[in-house]
Image (cartoon, rainbow, N blue to C red; front, side, top):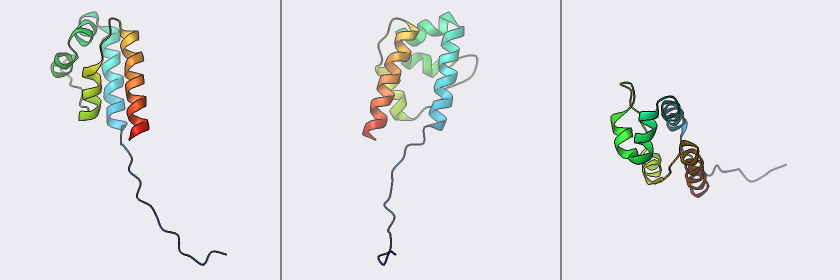
Length: 93
């Protein structure tokens, strides 16, 4: 039997559901369109601002900063590095 009341500790979580959806759409766009893929690999900031097919990719500033920092020459390399960056930012959050 517990005689001391349990207290709830505040927990900080990151809501990445919106980022996950945008990232999925971003990667699909890069996979199906060679021109968008090339833009993403050479100038991610511009590719994200321009969007694809009239659609934007709303991302948190943290995820946006991570995307822009990636330097890759192929889409698989980009995805690999993106996974590493996002995994490390999740561990430190």
